Length: 575
Image (cartoon, rainbow, N blue to C red; front, side):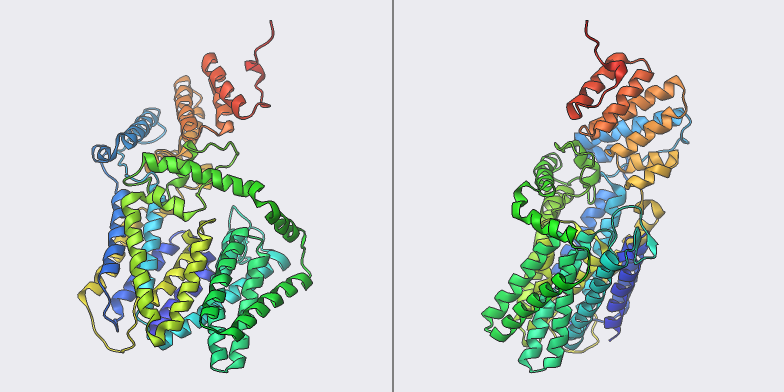
């Protein structure tokens, strides 16, 4: 019971407090869950392979995060060495110009130290939560699934209200302000909300079917009602990725029921969907956006959003070719991808919006192999759980969540949102054990993963708030010169860091500082060569320092990207 309370309380508080996206939340959750794992006894004997693989993955990521002298980082390729050298020279020059105080800089293998730290914290939190839920008995596992259905149904209902009836503007839950996106419930955008609502559609179906089999019609009706709300909220989220995930969930659940020859349950499933659709057509909410989204499905191959995603996925494989072994670093896609993108849109993707593309690019091939091995172990545990009578229903519910999340990961990065990630891993934990024997037994290995996780959380926390802000665009708007240079050290390929250092240098207004600023801005264009605004500003800056040839070169680049953009001083006048 204690484990049930700890697990459900963690997920509920995370959902209430903005889904876990605010500073220090994920570190607090990871530390709390690690301590909980250390203090609670296990009632099962688990295989040591899965925690060993999980620990290996965490240590691999930690190795890419650890700040190292430049000489050691050089062992991981000339590309990183060159990037670090450019950043080091810029830091030294900034010190000479008195922009910052002299200091020794240490570089990491990852190209985004802050983002990698957050990913490590997230994996520790997910792994320890899974280890915690694995300790529940079969009875408490079923209660946990029921609680999760109720929790997510509540979030779905409130999310619908916040999207269509009582808009929460730029706030999560009408309370917590965020600077970007169009928040829905505890999510910054509707795509993540819709995918989250879809997660428990299949479990609601399986539990409703089980109630029907036991002739508990009232219970079946309540679970069917939850299903309708989940489907309704997903549909009204207007997220095509969420629609795809829900469709996969429904197809999976229908196939399982048909295989099990539960014809009545299949009919009820179809009826529930029909009821949800009927409600959607009758509810009095603005439906112009819904009609537009539905209309776009008829010609999806020409949809701009789809085209952008496909372009991003194609361009991403060039990164894997250049960073095959250790990858760019977890969450470093945003700092590396701009130099590889071929699209000339004003705003490049900060995520591949396809985990099957982004994970190999960021984690590298060896770590990706470890992840595949972890998934194989989970599949083996699922098979064992499914073949155990008192765990078969739970195993089906877990499979439904995983099918939905796996499908949603094809088109979005919702799995990187703490509440989404923790929810999925809390369900995975339910099939990591099949024993129903209550006993107070301890195994030495049980404590290694949470203890290691706790120590790593404490280590990462020494970086303070920088872990949660250094790689976001808003950070640079108010960052001090010291913070800008720290961001450059942490993410040497970040065009935003180079651009911000340029602005800080030019603000001094000396000739030397302006020329240094020009070099920084020139480097920013190398790290995001399809960003026309950078070329435009570079042309103007070079004009200001009387570098006419350089200004014309930048202007040519600008016109290749935006032919209608003009700088009158650089226009070639007819003879």
